[in-house]
Amino acid sequence: MTTSWLPVPDGTDFPVQNLPYGVFSRRGELPRIGVAIGEYVLDLAGLAAAGLVQDRRWFAAGSLNAFMVAGRPAWQATRSRLVELLTEERHREEVEPHLVPQAEAELHLPVEVSDYVDFYSSLEHASNLGRILRPDAEPLLPNWRHLPVAYHGRAGTVVVSGTQIARPYGQRRAPDAQTPTFGPSTRLDIEAEVGFVVGVPSSLGSRIGTGSFREHVFGFVLVNDWSARDIQAWEYQPLGPFLGKSFATSISPWVVPVDALEAARVQPPAQDPEPLPYLQVAEAWGLDLTLEVELNGHVVARPPFAGMYWTPPQQLAHATVNGAAVRAGDLFASGTVSGPNPEQYGSLIELTWNGERPLILPNGSARTFLEDGDVVTLRASAPQAEDVRIGFGEVTGTIVPARPG
Image (cartoon, rainbow, N blue to C red; front, side, top):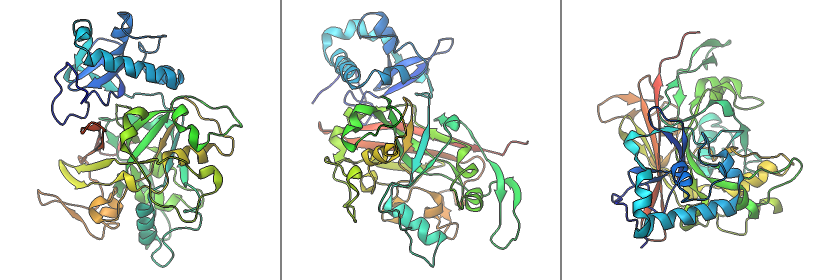
């Protein structure tokens, strides 16, 4: 098994098989790019200044975007060099000065988010929402099994883990009311998701086929797509989510490279009917990720990502099939990850069945939707070929009261 000369705790999210990228700083210093290894951040700007890694002004930067544009050959070369520096004892003396304890590092939004799209790719989640919201109709709408349904989100409100989430205002109409009222959302929810970040752009009018996914996508992040269900329910017909989603989306500070997840790739569920040719994938692109949803320190769900009906290459192919261009920093989220069992549901609207079955937390308190002061943390892990697991870190948000206008 590949091991680092740097002591790495057992069970860490960040063994040498992972090496996710992020942006960090210490007090009084400018943000720059680093890689997580064990309990440390390896300062790539410092390594580059010392001549230990190739750098074309990629790493002394406040976002990963310039490095992501460099493309897959640069990503692979950098990753190989980092593995060499961290596993060969002869490099220890020159690398150690560039290790920063994570406890001393402030983590920033890792990418400049250019665009944000959120899909709806879990069969179980879509079916549950159909049963909840349209109990007398078929759970899935006719298009769902033919294309990856999505909405276009707001890039400017994507925030890094740890950012407080203010309860949003909006219009909402009670089921027995004729007219809407205005005020803070009373049905604030989470959505446990996994997203991928585009590195290499495409040109307007071109398409990205499912076989070109690795050439364009830099890596994966954890996503919590906060949702105001009462605002969403009133506004979404006929054009879909808007204010019920656009107030905040949290992502993890670490971007796990595509190459770190090769061992996690599995065959996704069978698709029936067979997708149209542009959505067909020659490789197995399900990902065997286990998510964990924690509410106020208590794990309430463990959604399995391997069961997602629509896969990341299909999502990217569909998003560009009309000729839409992608840019470095584009974020594509999976939609809520849910499994077939109640303990695998990735949202409170499912876990409480739209408030009918409150969650009882260990302290005896009940939740249907989020209350002010609640803390939500998402985590995820994936298997590696060398009998270790790698993780995504975490994405955490605390609900604070609605701010006065």
